[in-house]
Image 1 (cartoon, rainbow, N blue to C red):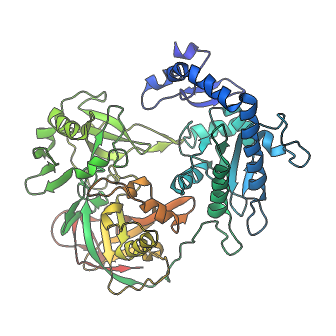
Image 2 (cartoon, helix red, strand yellow):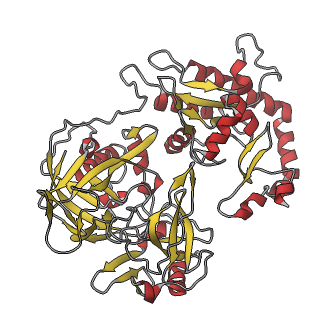
Image 3 (cartoon, rainbow, N blue to C red):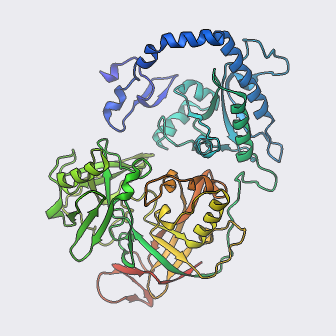
Length: 570
């Protein structure tokens, strides 16, 4: 019956074209999402009499229209005046306001365009700043600014304004995986939506001032800042630096508290620390629960007992819980649609194959503490591949075991967002704390960034240069072992860094980072690492001492990394 529907409301489609028969119903979090056409505005209906009284008090719709259009007209005039140091405009305006002639038009005329302005921000080279970046930085502004972004549930007008062909819209969906309401704001260098400023009855002149000041301060660059970033990240000369491992953290359950260890096995086969982010909590929609939405998760303290092969869990006010790591003892018999307790869950937009773990005992324990129905799941081998931009569900494993895959199988980051290992330097944290002090905010520790490795060196003089040393590292060698890490790029940060890992309270860390750690539309801090195998693919010794092949050191199946290990960073 859904396919025969001749009407669909906002939020019920993934992609649609206004000029041809092309509609893809919403598929996430479930197929039922495509039946959602909005809710009757019953609260508005109940307030109608109060609304009419308010209209009468302010002088009617004509007064409101004149007031809001006056603000919109001034806003358009001001953002047209915003220029980069090379003379290029900071904003491009769409719709009726793009052709508006402010000189030869009467400001009091009701014939001027309405009080909503759709626009995009431009870098000094003319490229588009993604609307997601604009929105995120606006939320960090003081005072905070809330924009509406995307296509505003008007796909036809959006397509026309951005000059996108039907084929480009379809490619954005099929190839890049872009769906209505997601964060994919730039595809192949072009925008998928815009930013909208709206003025109304309660808008005031100071609101306009704040928005224009924000756009000028954050995006207008002078000739000495060609990137448009407020502070360009500096790099060091490619000279090896001597560091030591200061802290090691393992996160058995995604978004829960860290397990701090003195030494821990690095799984050379899987490319990550053993059991790191191997478990996660999922809600009733199949989405992994995350710390910024459930801050109390930081109070759950998981730990791994390698000898007993036990996952131990502690939380305030709860009895301790122990769950076996062995499949035959702990695998849930709950049927979840994929057989053998397996199900596909979504982690930060990507699908992963998982097994419900610990059964109803674990589910009841977590649900009771967090106050929301949830299940503990364990990663089931590999991460889902992508095909034409749409994540494909993995085929269920024929094995009943959730233990590590055979040597040589595809490496997996388990439930980590982007990469399996995250490193930050204590030097970078010291620099950030200096910025936080200048803003009157509390200092942070390494735990705020949920790293696996924290490294340090003695007597590092950072002065006034906001220069994180790990930015320029491409390789890191662990001395005395065959382990060599390869840098895979910066870690883009979100509001999760604002959550105090000991209390769940939120601070202003992301706002401070936005002042000097913007790169390519993201706020970055720390670097991702992968394990670089020396020798031929698959040259991994399972047991015994470090091997060699034609004079080349080989990785053991598990290499121990310990606090105090010396690193050569280059």
